[in-house]
Image 1: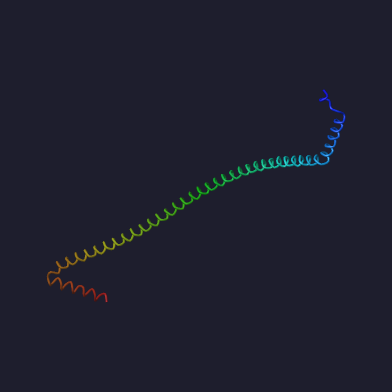
Image 2: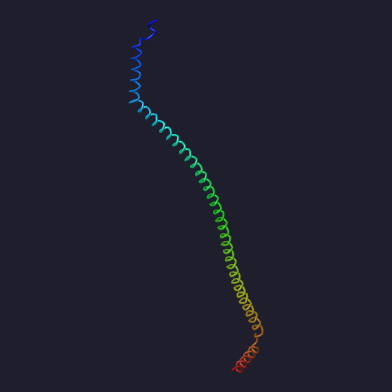
Length: 165
């Protein structure tokens, strides 16, 4: 069983080698390992902070997007109200313009009717006077058929002219 029991010298040198290795590792390797682990921990902490900030920005962006959507809906409704108001105003203006145009047409028709009435009245008077002259002419022809009646009429007219002067 000697194979399984180590010799005192072997244990001593193994102990010295382990202590020496711990001292070397403690002097050179452990500071680097600890520094690397600290850097890694800082990197992980920064990643967590970055993720939290990104989440906050995402939440803020979502709330801002909701605000923009609400504002856009408000503007849309405002634009629709304005369009409806403008539509009503245009319709009202068109009605007023049509009413004015109808009034102008009616006034022009009244003037035309009045002119036609005056022209018809004048034409009627002309025709009546023409008929009266024709009737008078026929009566005078019948009455003046003989010479004696003509002479009496001429003398009577001459007497009337002399008395007027």
